[in-house]
Image (tube, rainbow, N blue to C red):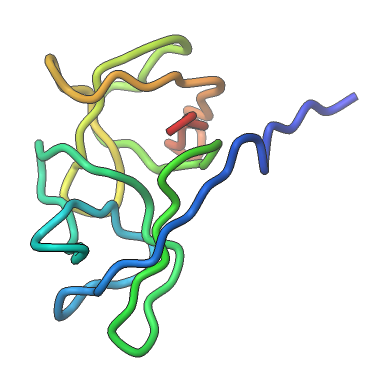
Length: 113
């Protein structure tokens, strides 16, 4: 039996997309209702799912799978920040999120935003 949490508690919002923003980036607010890509060590609000016509659909809540850099995170709550390349990294004082699974072969973590 395979357990999947995909779709759990997912919620999205549409924001104006800053120039150069691409799907797969971790988003941070850059202005009123506008998002840009979060840089290394920065807090993020969610995952950019798509960008079209200068609008970004951002997943703000729910389970998503994100690449990680640095040491593999452990399951449980951890402080996380953007790594500047669309993934996450451990960050003391970062956003506390629940990591429900880690794949150290693919360097990905399943995270509840």
